[in-house]
Image 1 (spheres, rainbow, N blue to C red):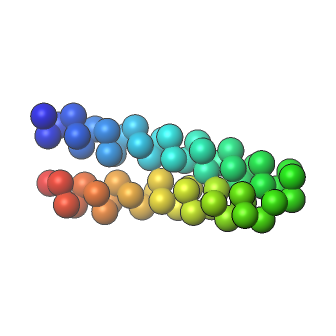
Image 2 (image 1 turned 180 degrees about the vertical axis):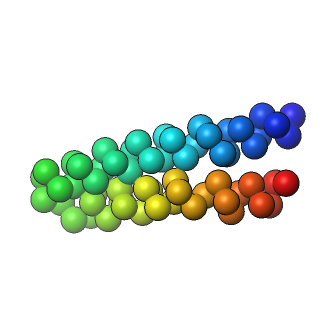
Length: 59
């Protein structure tokens, strides 16, 4: 069971957050919406940092 949880937090969630972040960054730049751009940047940074924070507390 612990292996499934670590797999979700280390591989699946960061990919989804990174994809949504890139999508929102592109959308914010194209439509000139700073709020969307900032949310995309925050999501992308969260996708990169979250596995290190979450997996330390799980393992």
